[in-house]
Length: 209
Image (cartoon, rainbow, N blue to C red):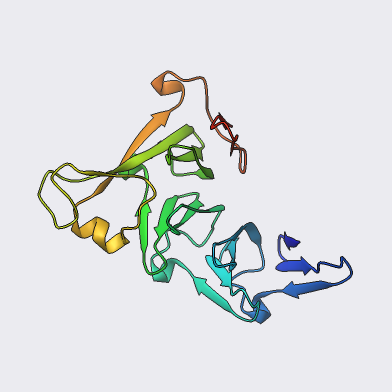
């Protein structure tokens, strides 16, 4: 069991429930204030920190790899973490969201169509649509659409699902742009200001916020 703390790093309680192991900046953690955690498909542990970006602890729990704004991350204050069906990591912050393809970061803000830059939660529904809980309701990432020009990645106007195996470089070189749809009071839906970690998707595919 892992515990993120507000200033004391992270602590791991062993399976026998008898001993804690603590990890801090001294051990390589990016920052001691940890707001979010995620276990990826390779059993690596990710920690979103409030000032140092994001840290990944390898599955043998021996070393950290850190990513921050200097690597292209949208903000060093990572509010939430989510990995999609193709292994891409999505990192929410108060200034937008980053897509990490394990090599580079691709950032999205209100300039690309998100309802608000404060990303409080991230979930995916049964259709593969990625939902962002924001300070002004819900924003759905419906997919990525081409710019009308023929590319080596698909026909003109071809649409990729939100979770896909394209690298960030392929998305950019192919002229593929995100398609966002906003659900809030201004677009006719009675929802506003989603709380942090305030969303879930049921087995039936219903979204609660």
